[in-house]
Image (cartoon, rainbow over all chains, first blue to last red; front, top):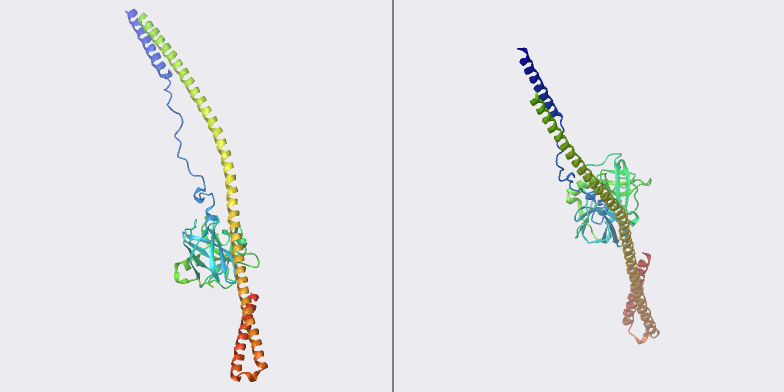
Length: 247
Length: 162
């Protein structure tokens, strides 16, 4: 009676081993390789403009240079030059003393183009003047919303000595009362180098916004600026400016 | 028992066949990937070469742009200086013209003055031949002419003083 039962048990055990072996073997068998993809190159993101491209003109000039304007004042008693800068497409700011006693004003852009003058007016309470042009100016910056404080960097763009367009840098030293008594309120004192002819130059912060207008230099070679708050106040009230009278 | 062994043998043969096929397919796949890698490597080398060339051209273009911008600034400055000189010359010419005009006016007035004075002297050489009132009136006219010459000379001196 035990012979057939033992054989049956052996066959069952063998079947179990074979089944287990095949089952385990299928679990560790390598799979077939997947098909090669059509492309392994990832999609390329769209090209970005190079850094600083938004501040460049088609001729590669910096926006800071493009807003500067050279002013020639052909007066009745001689010739003088100064600087100015655009604040919109057809308006530029300079100093009153740059355009005073004028028979005609001649404007030159950063690239030497003549820009005809439409009208000019001067402020009564500050050394500021507004000149309107009859053609568009190349570029204009934003005005800062507040005056700079001591230590803030400043960049001056203008035509010292009536020469080449020049960019100088420095920092704000502080505020002072106007030693020339031409401006109401306080003016800014900086160590950015300026020379005669720099009058009317824009003083910019690191973001390229106007923080003041150069109008003089001290005996210690410091530059004096009409602060942007004064400029904003003047521009907000057209009555502050009176038309320039020819000499 | 024999049946079980036969089944095991068949299973082993099937497993061996599967492993052979799998190995062959992996070898083919590996070769394909190697081809793809070599192709991409060649592309990378080509693109790197093109990038080097483009960077060299960019550097050159930047240098040229810098030179062109300097030249633009120089030319703008030269034009400005020439404009200044032209205006200064024009002002000098205007001044010279005013001085010349003033000098001409002085010369003409002086001529009229001296001519009239000579004429008056001639009349005064024989005063009885003329009516005294006429002589006085003529003398006043001579004074006016000479005063005009003096005024013209004052104007000339003002122009010269500028």
